[in-house]
Image 1: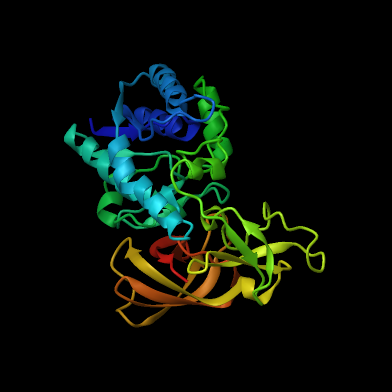
Image 2: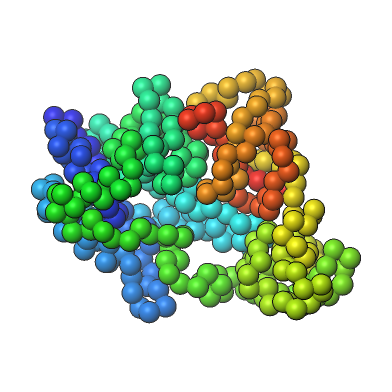
Length: 353
């Protein structure tokens, strides 16, 4: 009987993944990854609540379960990078790094050490025998965007039992099996922040440097609380309503040298759009589909919820440039640009400008 270690988070997707694998005859072990130990502003450590749900679920399914602490690895490999990026004025996506460094590296290594042939998670993605990463079948929950940094060698050792299901089907399976978390709310946002206010969380770790909000012409419009608290295209929370011609203000860019936040009026302002984007840290799930320096037409997502956008990519090693079929709004340094051809996720890179 083939052994599979399932990363059980306390949510419904990973619980149903474990249930389906057990029904398929695998020797299933549930393992809870404790990646973050700090309590929130109300003194609650959400990982304790999740661990309790994990125990209930695994007992209901009838599989052994353990908790493994990766908090040190998470702090070293993910959280410290997250802070450095914000300090540099960029907007990182820690979930992408967590998948590469923790779930599909530290956790995968652990699974292999305890004699498993595969690990499994509740991600809404699929793979094929060639080790390619494919979009999940539920367009509203599809998560290949967060896994683009993985390599085919990792994917060949990974199972994604809910990738071919809709979320509604996952909940129905959980309810039918009397799993106590069948209607548990999905977790949203960055895992280690939880429901806390983002600005307050960052303030605990990074020194704030307030400065001026300025127009493109350099006119001082207001004050910002620190460049790290803002992202390109942001409208809410600027506190400068009523200034100018009455239209909403948006963040156009950050000037780190002058510690200025450059703002413009109107959501369709030209300075909010780009025809190109430069990338670094380009990675491919498999070998690059074309040789270095050659152009490739593909579709790209610059944000998780974004619809696919057409673009031409030209790359040299880990660096490259995207030329979009149509100008893109609020292209944000630090975010991931993820490449697709049809249902296949090819890889991606980090936006630098």
